[in-house]
Length: 267
Image 1 (cartoon, helix red, strand yellow):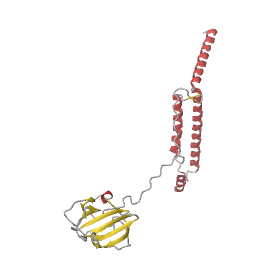
Image 2 (cartoon, rainbow, N blue to C red; image 1 turned 60 degrees about the horizontal axis):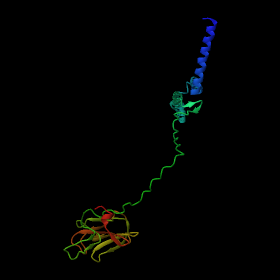
Image 3 (cartoon, rainbow, N blue to C red; image 1 turned 60 degrees about the vertical axis):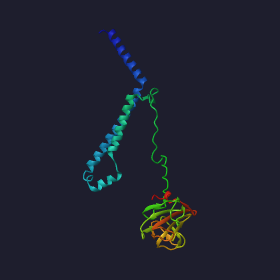
Image 4 (cartoon, rainbow, N blue to C red; image 1 turned 135 degrees about the vertical axis):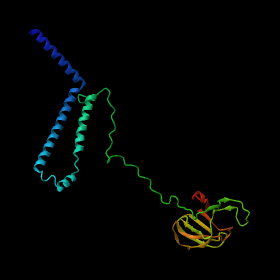
């Protein structure tokens, strides 16, 4: 190869290298690659220095690092080396992925196929507070069944062959054996204990504007003015007053107006 051919060959090599560098610079690989290598080199050097420092410390203190007091002191710092290593590896992996996908061009976001910016999750301390749970309402169902039994007569209008039974029933009749214990359907104060009228032996327990009535009782076990708790035994089943047999006549009144107990209690 003569001198002229050597010069021509050198010009071709120079031209190709120059064109390749320009092309790669336009795609933005060189700046990113340079930054990636620089960052990786710094992290690698820091990791090597850390390993050397730990090694030197271990050699100088080999008689101490295996004692129980040293292990306890280290555990106070809760230092997890694996987490730090995972962080470094994740950083390198992210750099490699970004370089391969061409996300950055000359340290600027790519103009084409630019991914959408995702919302960064707020730290726990800055996140919106969760809605406070609704306060639990006391006595969501303030009534319980006064006795276990079968409802023999419901609330409202009714027909009967017995002349001593009215046509408008203001409560429910629950059949039970004589002497069956009756419990207070709700808490409150005993406002009436009486044996007069069609109800026979009966009790009224009142709380605010609500009254429960227990009629045709055999024995009364409470006194007027006494404070009663829900579920407390207050009387026994009987057949006193205008009654056709042993049962409990039970009423719920709001502002002294009878309502259907079946709307409040499942019998």
